[in-house]
Length: 205
Image (tube, rainbow, N blue to C red; front, side, top):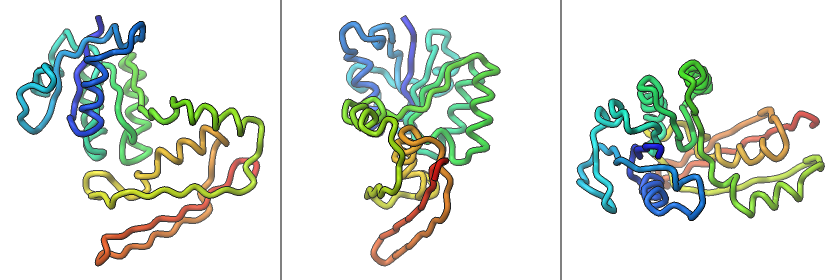
């Protein structure tokens, strides 16, 4: 069995705990054993999974991998700690709040001979797989991708563009590398409203 720990128990972390405790039959998850979860808040147990300290998770020889589901700003530091401790890491996107930090983490994982995986579950859905089949071999002439969401705490989640990383990953996976040609941001604090508009070009324009 491959020992794991979940770090962070928000919506994503709780989903990790649920799925690890109830793996799909004959799936690779059946070979994973959840030894506990880490949280700044005190819970005791969640669904019979015990809460453990971050220090114990890092030191444990029974834990081989960490699932990181904390707020964006803490991803980088938490990844570094688990890689330094010799653990594999799966982290919810984004890996870090800067490209420089992300490259450093990739290099660190390679040096440690550990897996560092950024999770984007949407790319594995049947709907997305069908979309990819439909656009295969076609050039993107012009398109618009629009999405909405809650206004987030930038101190914890990073610049608003990070809210769109998942959608940007779609576009790159479907159409290849993109170049930013322009970007604007509008804020209305009195209405708790923010909008960002970004224009991209594909490699073949």
